[in-house]
Length: 405
Image (tube, rainbow, N blue to C red):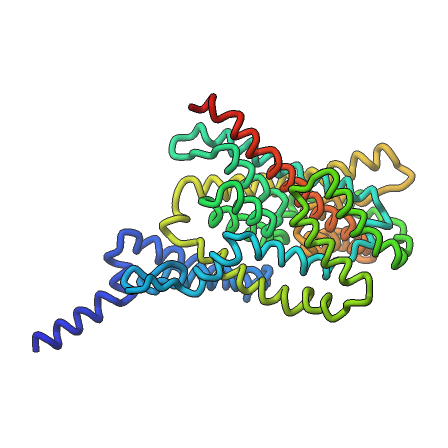
C-alpha cells in the first residue's frame, strides 16, 4: 500500500499542476500560458498576422509548461538533454542565422520596382527609422529608474524595435546584448503583428481627410535590366560604405537578384516558399520560447515593451510628417502622406495598412504599389541603421569603459 501511495505521490510531483502551485515562478508560468492563448486568439479569431503569432504563441505556451523542459535543458537528465525549441534557438537565434535566412526569403518575395520608379520614397523609408534612434535615447533615459540598467549596447538593440523589423532586431541584439534577446525579439515581433492596430490612429491623427484622398500619378514601368542592376548596385554601395550591414543587406539583395535574374527560378522559389516557411516556423517557436515567466515578467521587459511601442509610433509619424513636408516643397507632385507610414519595414503589412486607410477616405484611391516603395526602403533603412549601430556601439563602449570604471 505504501508503495502505491509513494508511486502516486511521485506521479503528482511531476505534474504541471504541482509545478504551477509549488514552483517559485509557477504563477508566472500560468500567466504566460494565458498570454500564449491570447496570442493564438488574436491570430486565429482576429487575423493578426497568424504566420507570426501562432508559432510565437505556441512557443510561449510550450516553454512555460512546468517540468517539460522544451525550451531548456532537463536538469534531471543524465546527459543534459536539451528540448527541441532550445536546439532551434541555439542554432538559429543565438548565431544570427535565422534573421539572415529570413532576409534572403524577403528579398526573393520583394519587388523593388516601386522604389526604383519613385526614388524619393527612399527618403520616407529613411524618415521612418527615426523611431530607432528615439528608442535608443529613451532606453538610456530609462536607466535612471531603479531596477532598470540599460547600457549603450542594450539601448541600441532596443532601438531597432522602432523599425518594426523582427529579424534585424534579433540579429543586432544577438551581437550587442544577447542576454536581452528574448524580450527584445518578442517586442519586435509583437509590434510587427500589431501594425494594423497601432498605425491607423497615428496616420489619421496626423493627416486631414483631404490629404488622405490625394491620388498619386501612376508609376512608370521599370525594366528588367533596372531590377537586376538595383540589388548589385546596393550591395556594391554597402560594401564600400558600411560593411557591417553587409550580412543583412547582402542576404536581402541576393534573394532579390535570384528572383529578378530569371535564370535560377528553382532557387528563388525555394527561398520564397519552402525556406521562408521553415525558418518562420523555427524562428516563431524560438522567439515565443523566450516568453518564459522567469525572464519575461520583470521591470526591464516592461520598459522594453513600452519603448518599442513609443518607437514604433514615432517611426510611423516620421514617415507621415516627411511626406507632408515634401508636399510643401514640391506641390506639383503630391504624395499621399499615408504612404509615409509604410516606411517602417514590416513588409508588406505596413503597405497594406496605408492602402486600406486611404481607401476608407476614397474607395477608388489605390495606394498599395505606391506604399511598397517606402515599405521596401524601410527594410533597407533598418538594415543600414543596424549596420551603423554594429559599427559604432562596440567602439563607443570601449572608449567609455575607462570612464565607467
